[in-house]
Each structure stands twice: as structure tokens, then as C-alpha cells.
Length: 470
Ligand code: PMP
Image (cartoon, rainbow, N blue to C red; front, side, top):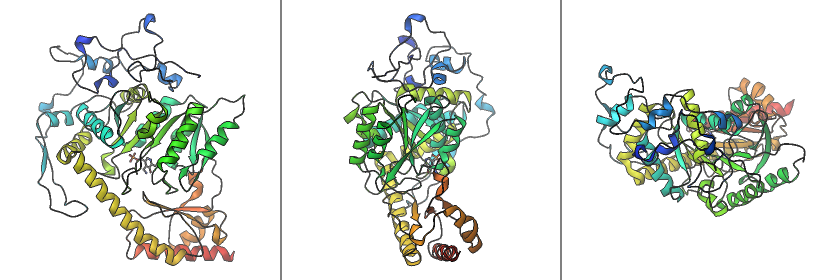
């Protein structure tokens, strides 16, 4: 196999090792590495040999001279390191969170408070990988939900999964590198890919999302003289925009193709919990095909479950890749908002894993009910003009307008639909090539279901009929 080997970040001496379980992934050093120590295996498991997917830039970038020393700040060490502001000057004494009654019904829970050392952490600079307590909490969650033993993976916090993904692309791709993207693809990742001058290779989806057959086709026919893609991006559950969800078997099929071609999966899964029956993730299934791990980096988001404004997401995956993301945090925003992390942590501690999963199920049911009502209205106005696959997860209907003879939904939305007073996203936005599309993406997450949704769908139907007259 065409393995690359990465250089491990230097681990501090044993006596100084950080006291917490997960802190090692955030460890780096400003001290130059001795030639004897390079190259090592990827910093990815406990010595397990796994390929390194890092970009040249990520391999070459070290954390800065201040942050690189922070892991050495352990008990008994007098530290003159960080220019941390003195919290005596901060005006906050405690933060109280008043919670609503659960979305599924029930009593209003008592207020919860962030104070003491958790408030100190919330108000202070923190580690680039995120606050240790929330990383440990999420590590337990991942172990529980995805049935992965701790060891060859770790967690990094980000300002939303979007932040982690754009840093992930930079950690993995050299300028001009090819990347396989399921298509239609979440358009939010395209600007980051364009900035890296990445070559987006479209891989089609079917009713079960990313097609293993199409993936194999693209790779089997890859020209011998062209650099092969090593990374694939997919949103496997409640896919944005297609609404499709990949079954466990489909994911196993994709993992087999990944094994054949030595690919890394970027599993963008913000809608994972937005289905009532959770589907095993790529991260969960990875060890069946890759016993040493190292081939799936998973992106979770709190945006759909707690609040989009918290700007909180977490990546789970190979330590070397997450370390490269942490290094980018150190150079851009230093770290994800500690206040957001501490707020989420307090709530998660209050709930416990079962309470969190209970909340997630309630949210999934809420969106399922909205989908049912929205779809009923959509059938009333669009049957005969459009078709779609009913999504088992997520927030979107991916509506195919070809039954009405629409060949370019952009011009429909730009002209007839706007004139009627309705908006949806033309499918073109989700194709990296920008090619015309017969589809529109319609979101049912927030629109008023009683009046606005029927009105909008009626207007869309009228717009389609106007277009047909052209
Ligand atoms: N991935 C997908 C597929 C999304 O739909 C979104 C949000 N629209 C994101 C990532 C970004 O999520 P976050 O708010 O966690 O940055």
C-alpha cells in the first residue's frame, strides 16, 4: 500500500504528562524534533501502522511557541507562560441557565448554574482542542453511541462542524488535490474546497445516498497519469440536499471500496440524531473493515439539537488529523468559544447520556411530524408536477421537477417563483460543476405549517405551470 508516514508531535516527558485522558491529542511542542525521532508512524493509534492522510502543509505546521508549551503546565509547575487575563477583572459571577420544558412534553426542569472552576474555564483562554471536560463527555457519548472503544481516536471541538470541516480539508488536501464528493453535495463545503483549489470529483447518489457502485466506477476508471483522490466527503444521514440516508449495508459497501482504494471518509453527520431509529455510522462500522481505524473522521454538530448560535461542533477521528485541525485553531481563533463549550457541557452533565439521547429522540420526532404535515401539503399541490423521496431524517425535501418538464430549476426560481412570492434553493447550488438541475431543495424545518407552507407550495405549483406555458 502506498502509505505515507507522519511525524508524531513530541510527547512531553512522562513525569509531566497531562493529568487528563484526552489531553494528549492537543499536545505539541515548540522544541525542534531530533532527527532520530523522524519519521515515525502516524500518530494515530497506539503504535498501530495506519496511513497518514495529512497534507504537506499540515505535516509542516507546528503549533506556536506559547500554545505548544501549555500541556507542560501541570501541577507543581510554576508557569509564567500564557498571557491569560486576570479573571478578577471579569464582571461575571455565575451564569444561570433556565431551561424550557422538554420538546416532547414534560415539566420545566430546575435552573442550572455555571460557577466555580467551570465558570473560570468558561471565561478563560482554553486548549485549542477544546475544554477537556466536554471532550471527555463527548468521548463517552461516542463510545456509547458508536460502540467504539477508546484508543485510536480522539475528539476536537470546533466553532460548528463547518469550522472543523474547512480546517479538515486544509489538513488533508494539497493545493489542486482531487477530492471525491457525493453529489448533490452540501453547498456549504464548496467555498472551502475552492479556496484550496481542490478538484471536486462528483460521485452520484441514489435513494440510499452515496453510491458504492458509482464510487467504484470513478476509481476503477481513474486515469493512470492523474493523482488519485485519497479523501471522500459525504453526509450520510438526512443528506443535505437530497434527504437520503445511507443504510448500514450501504455504508459497509462504501467502506469496502474505501479499503480497496485506501480512502479516508469525511463523515459530515449533523442530522445523525434527526431520525427516530439511529443508523450505524461510518465511524461505528469502520473497525469491521479497518481494524486499526484511521480512515474515518466524523463531524457532529450541536446546531440542530442545542442551538445553532452556540456555534459548537465536534470532530471524532484519527489523532494526527485532529491534531492538525487543533494547530489551525491555534493559528486562527486560538480555540472554540469556552463559554459555548461550558454552556453545552453544563446541560450535558445535567442530562447525562440518557437524557441527551432522550432529547435527541424528541427532536427527531418533532421533525418527523413536521415532515409528515409538510409532505401532505406538498402532495396536494405538487402531485403530477414533481416527485421526491420521503426523507427518514433531516429537514429537506429534494423535489424533482422533471415530471413537469422543468430542465433548469434556477431559472424557475429566479423568475416565475420569485414573481409568485416563493423561494427554494435551485439544485444547481449543490453541484460543484454548477450544471443546471431539475431539482429544488425545500426546507420544512421552520416554515409555518398551517398557512405558509400550503401557500408557498401552491405558489410553487403556479410558478411551475407558468414556466410550462413558456
Ligand atoms: N454540514 C451540513 C450537511 C449542514 O447542513 C450544515 C448546516 N447547514 C453544516 C454541516 C454546518 O453545521 P454547523 O452549524 O455545525 O457548522
